Image: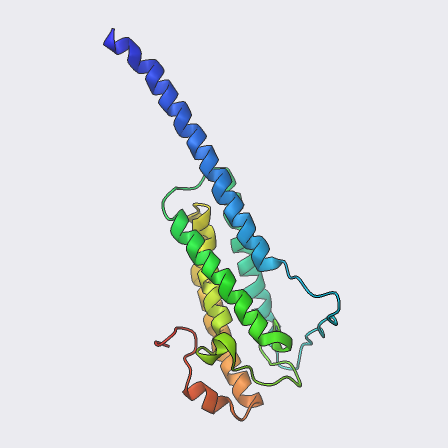
Length: 207
């Protein structure tokens, strides 16, 4: 009878949907893990001397550096946890992965351009020149633009929505760092005002 064929077919379709969903979770999870590894793992030449550790200077807002790191660790760790618990949603994963990948690429390019000037702190490292090459030719804070892309893209890659509540806080922290670093760089480098007059802060051609 026609009605008798529907139940087995429906069960097969449901089973196929579950398998497809599980396969999608594995694929997007692998994409996420690969991008996190590309972000975190640093490869250094065996002949290169170890970088000089950054030192806290008087007046450094260490609390802001701490909040910055905690928020981004919470985003990167919370996204896969939420996905593991809820399974995530399908919409937005591809767009999130593209944004995440662009953020990782921008972060790496900015870090390479900074070289010895790279530091987790607001105040510039002592004895290093003002960096104006690479992505810093157009933007004064390209690394923070990259981090903003990571903050939005990483949770979307694994289908998260709840973890996105941390994104406004991450953007606020980045905006505050941009303001404080502009002030610190202007105090340190006499040529900074001229450099700032021909570059945008964080958004190309806009701001």
